[in-house]
Length: 575
Image 1: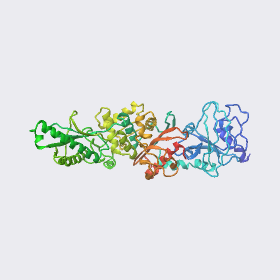
Image 2: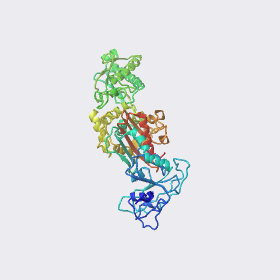
Image 3: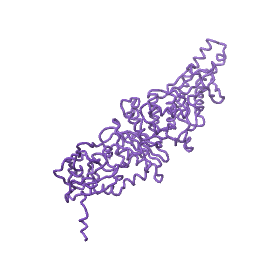
Image 4: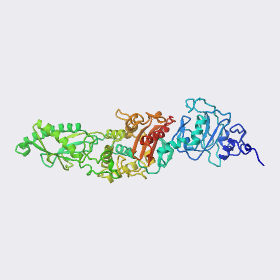
């Protein structure tokens, strides 16, 4: 016998109740659900809320884009599977209750209880709804979430226009919009900086290509092993014969032409003094008679330079180049050490000639390469630049050559010959000594240019937690700033590779995080990464790592970067 179609339809609340596994309280028509005189613990917490609309979420969330405000934070509706959406006619259009998973509640910085009781308060008056008119509806949860035979999902409250939320969720437009840029090969890790509580993770244990996020490892290790105040001295020492002088490189990544000119002045003064001493002690010596010195250079601190393992041909020398322990103005070329030594020799020759001293090059037209004795007497020295200064330049503008020099300096600081293999081993050993997992780490180089580099989001998050620790004073410059400067890590929309001029944090929805997110960028042709630190909606620092590999190249790298920026902005809960 035919029946009225409405007889076969259950109310939305009844459908919701069945999906939450609760059959104790029959719904009342026209209301979301009303339960009276129910024993504590016998009813799903959802069924104890009246006069509200329900969205039942099944499965874990994927925070590709947190677009709907939830108590000052945001929920990723587009990537959550919606089972049912029902609404009482008496429910205001701006009132919504979302049943989400524990990880979403944690990611939003909200308090959730898995124990005896939990109360969800009305959204704060400062919350901004996503659609006008903005009207806060009273929301109460007189619930006792007692332990039950199944895992209950907590409630979070939100203020949003139901139609807009339903449309975004039902059609998964947010998901499709972001996923086309980010793809499926995506690693995410978000943790509370102080407690280490895991807020969200996706493929976080897998080793991914980090691109320039590898510079975080290089910076951490350089500051930890060498210290922020360590300086890379460049010296001039006596050679094997009385008339020989040697320019000895200290691996200063920031050595400039002006520095070499200053060192030439100091060397001239030293040579004049040495010549006067020789004439007084042995007037008949060759040095005393012709007043001539022979200049060589020693850049043996680093092994003979070569391309790094996994460097693409197209990247050399425009993106990265083999580095030498001696170079000036970050110049590269066939032999940057000889080029820098020749510049120094030219300046020294002019200055010395004015003082009545002759300087010749051991290699004829340029200084020859040699290895000075470890106990050779120092004639002149330049203190050079500090580790902190080098790290600042490397992180702020993502300078690859500085990264490769620091990568080797860490090995030198650990007493190793800085070959590629030893430098990789030193990088991993330093992280392990500080309690950071290296199970998926391959530090093939220091800049992140190598296609062999791998690191997990877990490792980067653990590293950043130590950067955010104010007791790790040697790391303070990375996030808190030092020496009168702000963070050496780029600040969203303000400095370095995250500056507005690079198109970062200038558009919705990430624009609200400008000046808040502090992070290291990473880009290869198929990789976009961003790892850093930001205060969450609860006022506590959060660390995050996002690495997109094999990005969809139908879209521009900037589009992918902006999608990643939006993800990072959700950590702050600002939109």
